[in-house]
Structures are given as C-alpha cells and as structure tokens.
Length: 260
Image (cartoon, rainbow, N blue to C red; front, side):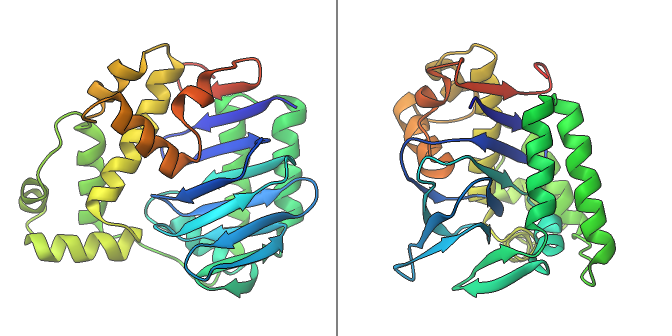
C-alpha cells in the first residue's frame, strides 16, 4: 500500500510500511499501532524485545522497531504531553518506561483504516483524530494543564526557527531564571529545550522538503550546520533519511498545510 505522512502543527502521523527496522530517539511521545500482525519493539535501555500490537513511548526514549514489513501507524503526540496523559490510562502493561497494548486499540485501528480507505486529506484526518482523542479525554481521570510560560516558550521557538534564540532570552521573556525554565520545560514536555528545538526543526524541514526545497537549502533554513548534519539528525529521530522519505513519491504521500 501507499504510505502517508501527515505533518500537522502539534502532531505528526505516519501510516504505511517500512522495509527495514528503525531505531528511534524521539523528541516527542509517540503512539504506535500495528494494523496487521504483531511487531517487535526493543527497549534500548532494557535490552529486551517484546512482540506487541500497540505501544506508547515517552519522549527521549531510545527504541528499535521491527514492523516486519507490515502496515503500521506511528503518531507523534503533542509536545506538552496532553495526548500522553490521555492515552496512558488506556494502556495495559509496562515495559520499562514504555507502555504496551492499548485497551482502545480497535478504535484506533478503525480510525487509521478510515484515513487510508477514504484517502482523507490533511484537515479531514486531523478532525477525525481530534474526535477520537476527545472521546478518550472524556473517559480520563487525568487532566493536564501545561504551564503557560512553557507554552509561550514553545511558541517563541516555533516563530524563530532560524534565529536559534538563546535560552537566556527565552527565560527573560517569561520572567524566569535559566535553571527554573530548564526544569519547568522538562517537567512539562519530558525533553530539554535543546531537544525540543531540534525536534521542531525537523518538523519544519519535512514541510520544506515536501514543497521541493533541496537538502542543502532546508538544512540552512532550519539552523543545521550542513546537509550531512541535518540528514543524520533527521534519521536518528524520524527513523528515515530525508532522501529516503522523498525518493519515491509514488510510495509516500506527504500531507501538509499547503498540500492537503
């Protein structure tokens, strides 16, 4: 089947197949669901593998995923862990700091299959996802209210992708010391400011690549030292080289705001 990559502002969704296993060190929490048989997940810290059908992975966690060439979906969740807290109560088992086998797995499979079968565009797929997550939120006993100062810092980082604002500037803008902002940011997102900035740059870079920019142009626009540095970072976090992602448009469709 043809694979699809949806690049929304606060989430990213991949649905499709991969030829090889991937090793990830994500900058955001992720929810992975197999649409066919079991897939293998190896926890890099635990050095143990499990055969699973769905998993919820916290940010900044290294894992290896072997989908065994089956159709699967990987949903990168919002950076403020609102989705994480919605979903964690649906999971059945613990595997180190990873959670396994969602009780709502069938609901997600139906949602994901609708996207593929109906060929939903950028807006339609996001609306359907929001409805599903809102349903989960209504059942949840855990409600997260992100710190408004962290929300503001994230917004500043998004609006200054090529400026690389110093952490001192970010802290001053929200009337916090650097150590306090660093602590608060990690508490609210699960990752450091540096890693979030790098994660968001990759999101922006995927959008730029899909619009026809070269690797060199994209690397420069998103603050990487060169295209090699950009490519290596992209692969370590996304699991694919950017050139691999774009090498065969007949195999992968990228859905962005400009190209729904």
